[in-house]
Amino acid sequence: MHRIVLLLSVSAALFGAVYLGLGPVQAQEPPREDVALTTGCNLKAFIPSYARASALSAVTGDIAGGNPRLWFQVAGTPDFLLYDPRSEERSGVTTLDQEAGFICVDQDTTWNRPVLRR
Image 1 (cartoon, rainbow, N blue to C red):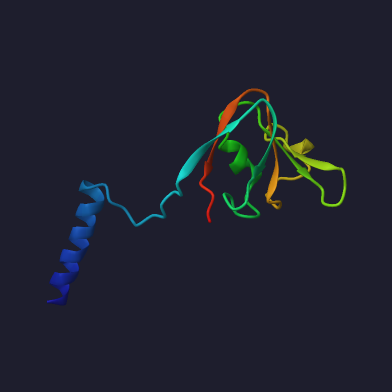
Image 2 (cartoon, rainbow, N blue to C red; image 1 turned 180 degrees about the vertical axis):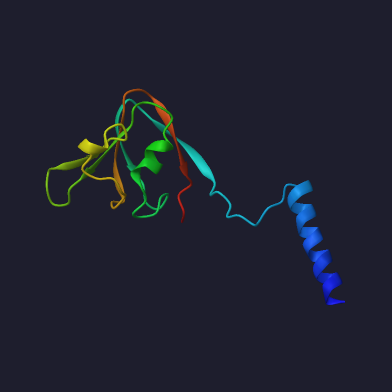
């Protein structure tokens, strides 16, 4: 009896996976929103849309063109650290550790970021 139930369960799972396109339950992508970025530098919040320690390439990857660069002020100083996805060697930071920073773009574009989690 247990073999029959097990066989039916496995068969149903295979049928769902093969014929219905159902796979293992996957985490859903968080909802997203388009944020307008104007030519020049735009002060924007990154956290909580992105988790602390996220790769900054995830942020710039969500920006549609415009040659994005990210600038973060070093706390207590007038200095800034650059993240340039086209030049990792000249980037002073590669992971997100500040709540906000500047997104600088060469032309008006949009940033398709995860909706701010509240």
